[in-house]
Amino acid sequence: MEKAKTIPIKQYIYSEKNYQEREITLSELESQESILHSTSNEKFWLNLDEEDPALLKSICELFKIHPLVQDDILLKGQRPKVEEYPHHLFIVAKMVYFKDNELMMEQISFILGKNYLLSFGEIEGDVFDRVRQKLSKEGTEVRTRGIDFLLYQLLDALVEGYYRTLEIMGEKIDVLEDNIMLQADKEEMRDIRSLKKDLLYLHKYAWPLREISSYLSKDDPLFINKETSMYFYDIHSQLMEVIDTIETYRELLAGLMDLSLSSVSYRLNEVMKVLTIISTIFIPLSFIAGVYGMNFKYMPELQSPYGYPLAWASMGAVALGMLYYFKKKKWF
Image 1 (tube, rainbow, N blue to C red):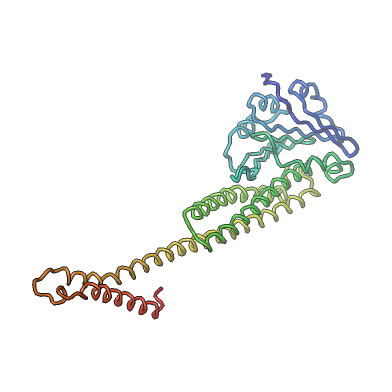
Image 2 (image 1 turned 90 degrees about the horizontal axis):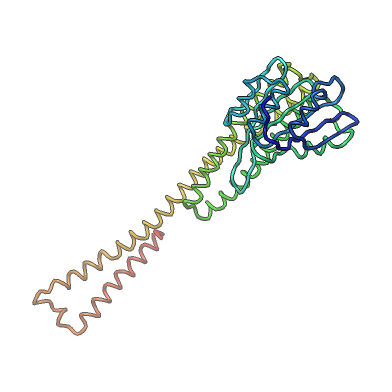
């Protein structure tokens, strides 16, 4: 067996009365091989956050995981799916969350066996702390039920991440709507496009996750008890709500895009109206100035001492008259 570099692996061994949580190395895991295939009531959860191909291969060989599963775990950007093998169930899901105001997505792979569950992430950290807290407390449902119920709890935690993500997006949409009503600009348009892109990704990963939960609740899959299948149907219902919310937000963003374009168009029209009024006022003024700028020899007003102020007065009167007319017509 190929030796992988020494990095900690999170191990959870539990039953209704006992619970053990610790970080171990691959060599320690290999020394516990008898526990992995034990027929006792103890369940075994192994979680590897950081990606390490050599370590992953060693763990999969220890649990006799199909080589195709090993390749799928390392192949990122996959569509969520569920596959049934002779001795285990393989599930690919997506974990979503916001980090530094940016939507992050991480592939989480699960392998469910008779009394064990393996989970593999891409980077350190996950959304399973609530599940760990339940697992550490005696008398909780996850401690009294089978390993398939732990899988349900972990998938449910992933779905809660979708809810939290949509809640943040809803707040962003509310802020966008307020800003657009005040004054739409390029920043709002960019934010709308960014949110639409994020919602597209959410829909892309939530929809197949809905199919996974439907399969686990109805098709009598390997290592899923009938008592637990109804819980997976609850996840299915939650994901339908998530998908409906995504569609609602996409429609709202489409409306905000139209509102933003209308607002920009309205502001442009207002600017053009002001410029048009100014240009219109200067047309007769330019005419008057042009007439008295022709420099003919016989122009009586040129010899009058009041010619210059009269020219200004007439231009001022014309300008004020036009402004009064435009105001009366409510053109500005």
